[in-house]
Image (cartoon, rainbow, N blue to C red):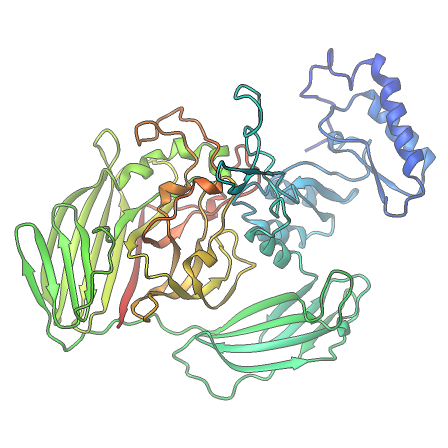
Length: 620
């Protein structure tokens, strides 16, 4: 990573290297400095970026340094050459940051652009900052960028939607499509879910559990922590058992202190105990209101044993015919289609079938591609996983009694378009007499060198009336494997549509991570509750996954070379159903760049085999 004068540009043609353009460059630089030299908010001069690094930029740097001795000068194109006081690259990897920090101490390293926030993005931001905060020479960076650059258009019936590149002018006008939709907020400045991740990662107060002593680190430069109220709350399986406020906690800037926290005297050790510590403003200041939470952290203090599904003493009956398997008693009625291997009926206590159009639990390995997926061609490279479930083959389905429960085992071969087996998927349904259903899933690849799997899970379509959702896990806004630092573990409640996000160009949205349990009920309070063993990811929509895809398809099947299509929020159908994904996990969203960078390996589903389980309990 040494200094270099090599250029990616053709120096015989590029204006940064041609003598006839030197006067124009120097004139621009001088005019900038003379115009803005008395503006206090200007703390660094920039020579520009993405423009080459010819002799003129060395001369310009030298002129500024002799004209203004009080400010630093930065130049992205300088790299490690002498004509920058700050090493300020665009979109370096975490490894590149660490390498610089371990080999350089002479100049600060500040990324002039990083964490490209296009669409569903800003993954692994916490990982960047774990490294940044380890080395003093690493001093942060600038997320690209702040706001989506969309404009309001109207349909013929007057419905408004955000339009973007390619939506204006004749069809043959060149455009970058939605590439300017890369902000942390919508065009109207409504915060996207990723902004909550940034807020948490960037907070200036850090909390640490040091053997029961809760250390608070003040990373403000000028603010004593006495300006904030601190509140701590103990929650047992999501329910508050103790809450206290500390009003006068003094810690000087760049210092640490210990919060005096009283633990609850007695609690049920079979339940999860979580401590949440937060800092709130005491007064309104500028745009920040009184009692605004500026920092928080959670500590899991007691982790119970995984849920143990015990057998029921209530009798249950299996009826096995040529085409179906039925498991039933007075509490539950379940029907499987032996040809498809899919659960087609699920009803409790003589109630109606809650499954929509026989679309019971179906293996699912795909997600509606996000912008970062399009950028690295995941939608092409991994397309076999989009069709693996559609191409599945039932290899066996059988039922038997086991410990007073009914056990239905379904085995699938997952095929590619050439009808070659690439993996297997097995689901075992253990149905108890009280109506509870334990669902054990095993996925295993049968070929090597298969492409990345977007997700491993199951999808089920329920009647739309099951619209009331609650869960105990990360939330309330969407969060993902590599973007969940900013989401608290708590109990959240609302309607299905309250917890999803309408990306201006539709794509994957609404995932919740680390979920202990979730429920869907109708307005009469009837429905199902699903317990992860120990956790699951889930999402729920009144649309199906294909509604969020932005791919041009002519035959219903994606092929190599298919183009990415301009689609909008108004193109997403609201259907008469509730689509529920219960996943082992979905791969992370990534965010290093949106033009080739992949999700980091630690947030990919790279193992050959995965197992996960959950328990369905009726609410009737």
